[in-house]
Image (cartoon, rainbow, N blue to C red; front, side):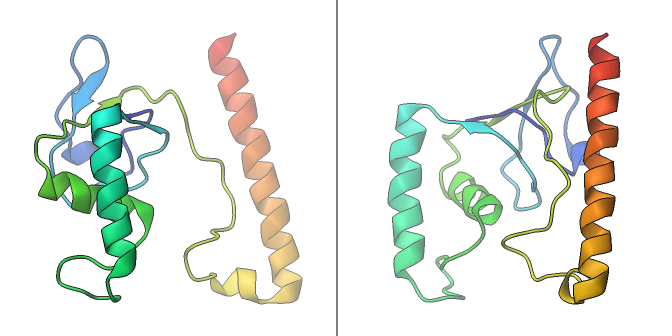
Length: 137
């Protein structure tokens, strides 16, 4: 498994090797690992495990339905033979947007403020784009 971004908890990870690769520990604390590439052998295990999770009841001690970040961590924990690497510095970032999977924040639930939050997110995306184009130039 190779992630294009080392996630939100970069401080808890080992330093990257000279090629910019980090070996990720099998820990449930890794989140926001964007752009995952899988070898066929890892994909076979992941498909089997995800189907099993979906067939279990929520809160099952063996792992019921959960968000993908949690599910990937759970599978990696159960299958330590699955090596996971991350690329640093990241080759992909997540744009600012309202979550489709997490509960809405208070400002996304109030109609008038929701529009303001949308404008602020658009400004943040524009700032990210300017920052990225400045790095390339």
